[in-house]
Length: 228
Image (cartoon, rainbow, N blue to C red; front, side, top):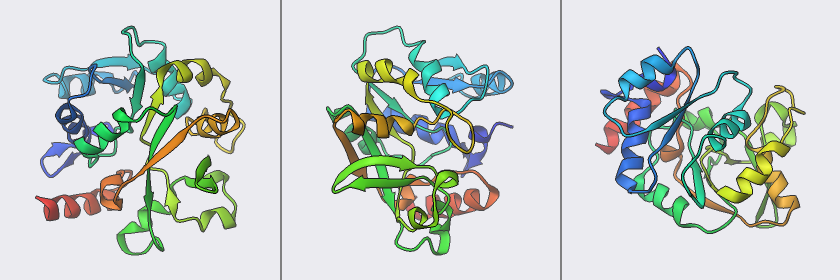
């Protein structure tokens, strides 16, 4: 079963996310990036949702997935919102805030004081590197030194991009990193070098949760039950 179809309190991870997108009433309809081997199950599971699909034939990283989407956007649009399908708790109001910002890039950020208790799940997330108040870079955990890993501001990987800027720059990122993948996060450093506006919206750790393991699934279910 694809990870995004794993149930959390009776509803799949991606359905939680899509319901928030629907509730936010943003246009146009969502586009879901799927792998060839998983697309059938995902399409069947989400048949009641008004969504489009793009197939990522090779899994070459988040930047490559975004590039696949950009190449398949046919409607006129000024902004593109990008979410990871394994983050079920993003709120409709947060999505509205992302969509309403006029900067070239707006991104969500979260903070964990000491990565203790259940917030230890954030320890392996990318770190937000700032120059004063301005976001300068996102450093993925596997590419970080010990000093960078002490930073407590992390990247939930949810963004709003100016579409024209994204189209012009998505092809400029490279695989010069530990994982040899195209990182979407490299666009942050590129925008900083171009002196573009990079805004951030702070969200609570509970809203930022992503699910990549059974432990994180258990944590997510406990948090959701507390909020219901």
